[in-house]
Amino acid sequence: MFREKKQIAICVAAGAMVIAFVLFRYLPLRQRIKAVGRIKAAQRLAISKASMEKAQMPVLKEQLLKLQQTVGNYQASIPSETDLGVFLQMIADLMTKCNLNEQVIAPHKEITVEGLNCIPVDMQCKGRLAQVFEFYKRMQKLERLIRIEKVKLANDADFSGRVSMQAKVVIYYRPQSVQG
Image 1: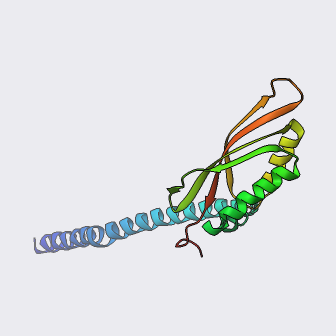
Image 2: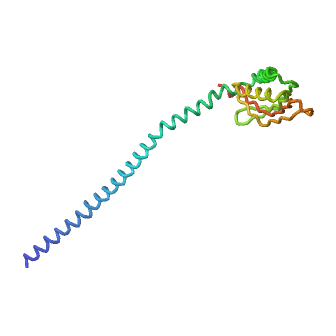
Image 3: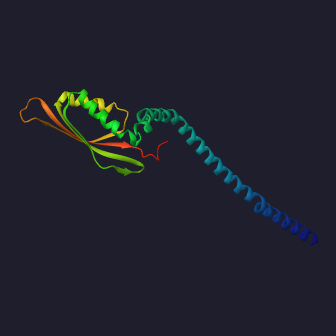
């Protein structure tokens, strides 16, 4: 009987040790292994995503260079307000060089939008269609940001080959406080 009690005590102690090992050592380690596995999988995913994004870098650099070439020197294309009269004179000179007659260049009241000032300008002139197109080609080459809002071309009443051009453009400039 003493021997049986001893064997039962040994079995109970061994069982308690197994239960303690499972509860306090095996299960926590198993949870840590699973957590490390999840972290490792997340890191593999992040690495593969980064390598895919790395492969796109040359394409993005090329797009950036193209955009920089397209935009050019943005600040230079929006000069200071003191250049407005000079610019309007350049437009009048362009019209004269293109042999356009009856020139009218009428600026309107300035408008301020998000740190930029703009002045709507009405332009009118008469000439042959080729001369009008030449005027627009030359105006496009100016190093100044201009938005052409409306162009109206109308034949003369006698159909002599001359057209009347009316245009609404917007000229942008920077106020003195925004200039760098």
